[in-house]
Length: 390
Image (tube, rainbow, N blue to C red):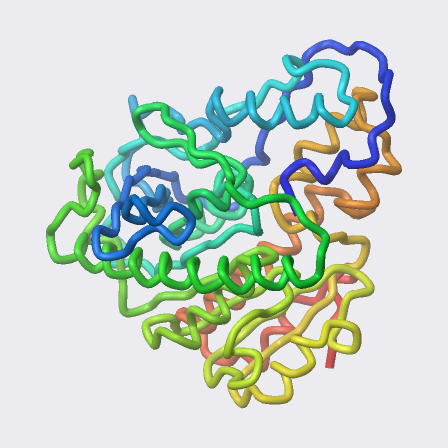
């Protein structure tokens, strides 16, 4: 599902409107946020989508910062990515490609890392199929404000757009399809590619802790970044295919101690092998282990600790930044409310985000060593919108 499916049913001839400014909610944690973007090239691996070039990735590292004075804010979506997003809105009926204005993130580029509390747990994030990492910025920066280091990946040539430091933007090469066989083939290939991307990035994080700079362009790393990374405590989460990636990556790599899946069906050997380490599944309303075969099989084969919740009022794109963008567009009359609710649900987007983050933080706090008992987590996070699935 693409980033613009939120308005896939938008009606034509919508009225002209003034520019609509969208912004991220304030992070709920107490720590300032630093961020650095890294260009990483895996010279040992030809790109699966363009075999004539090595695999090239962009990642963002979000971390607790000591001092953000004078450090510029990282864009949420750069002008180039905003333009691509706006163009896709115009293709399906939005009145103008120039009416979307995106405020910056809360992360400060290159700010020194905060080290007084010692190394922090690392959480890796993989987005949904076709989604750039920037469209889950709210999750990344909020977790960082609570003391996690969050490493977000864009999967080049599969993401709608991946922007590199020189301004080059690589677009998706995946053809749109609804054919079940082609969907299966795309998902299988993308999952395997993403797992390899994840393991490569984990290796590069280890390089940083060893005092090396893995950035291909040797962009300076923030001060003390190596000291804030605890690569002995690594979790992973993802949305949609990113959730499948998290599960399969944990299956393949023992460095990942816990994984969370936000409404993604599973691909790969993890479905039949299961997992022996903690796993969290959060699904949209009406989607459960009775009607998603991969979840049902995985649940039966996994002997590790596992929890399953269903978020009432949510739809598939409730688990990324899209609802935060959709709501102001609906309010401005640029997107019909019915079209938005079919894709991002009826739950208030800020409430939805707050609930998701409460459960993600509780899960990773517990599984990465801050607290003790995963079995007690549901009782500590009672919320009427989140239903425990036995």
